[in-house]
Length: 582
Image 1: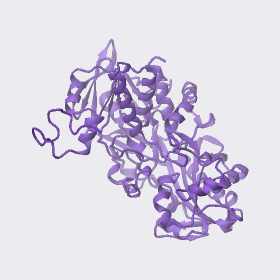
Image 2: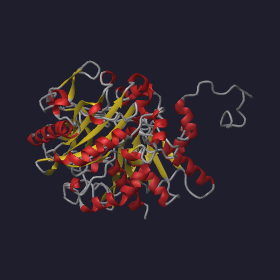
Image 3: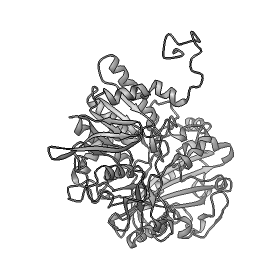
Image 4: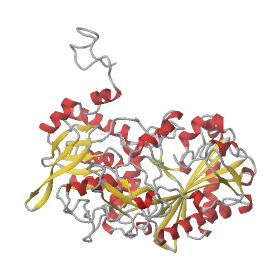
């Protein structure tokens, strides 16, 4: 066991009782993060090779790969918020589901009046940021498909090649596994044992996957299907586990490893500071080229010295930071893309899919279904298809939520209670917002004097967006009615109304009922490329400075429809290789 305090002379109530009101944050600072005194020393004395802003996927990927290449690399990671969740909320007890949304999301921008007043189409707002250690990684759905070459439409070939080189290592870091491999190779006895403890990705998974493989591409626009790739494999195999990935544990383990290396003189410490908002990048011209020389933070100025600055803080916050810090650089935020969403919940009689009654009492399935409108990869969409068969939803609720493939698109208790003899299909359908639309942008907002939030976001649907949205909705109905229902559309029922207050009918819900008024996976505000209007070069460097680099969805030249995390991580690893001299 450890000692009771940091000082050998101030422990055990002698000579004084010592601190009587520790906080969780103080404990974490004492063990893992920089204390006030250590932060003062970092600002005044420490020299770093890399300063990373953010603690999400890209920050972990960059730091992990850099330290793998060079254990002596000196890295400081800055997180704007405090420590909140130790891991993905689905891995925690059931009440933690209430942490999704609400105060766990912040919105460091103002929405355009056009969106607020409903004059820009269905979309009224944009999902926000998670301002805590680990960022969005603690509240995400963990879908990690690899884009194929066609889906990389509009991307530089060098960037596509970099992603391809690193997809395997990115999947290893994120612990990606296909849904059909979660319980593959187990005997019926093993599956029966597992079913007594948690949901099974078994017969239901295999059934819907086979049906999609056989007939999925017969639906207009659909061109590929696969078992859902989920960041959910247990790092230490225990036989039956399923664990959604998040960065806090991995970052803290990395810091612990580097602390041991530093003590043994085989590496350098990894420094992490929390509750520190980067407000402004201070820059000067060096040999005619601007260079970031220091960071103005909520906890004082941090000189950068010769450090490379890595912006790993999402898509929109780095755009605001660069716009305020390099006001003469044009075009930041002129391009914007995201994924608009439809949410469709349907059910099919269980007996139609399981005529022999072979399934367990609680089975799950998850498949990824990709399509395009007008045979054009400029108009991509995909369906995140979750399937549930639950005979005892009240009894199973505490375990079922943990193993659901999608944290947002899941069946409600009312939907499950009324569907004990059905398979419930929950479809989160994501479509690509047209990045060429001049009506969608992320620009400065002079009315806001807070330099961390002074941006204005407008998301306007044009004819191309509406066309894609209509095509993806129609394809989803086609998948449900002609592929996943053996007896056709007459056997399919749809949920109408609020999740806990609706009812099932055979009538398709209308577009206003299924289309969500907030997109996800914002991208493209700092797109990468060789063209003059691309703010980021092929080495991920911001063209307006010689030591500032960008990671994440802001780099996307075109949004596509595929979930972005795997590609974000792969490119962050490539950046680490470029900068750490591999």
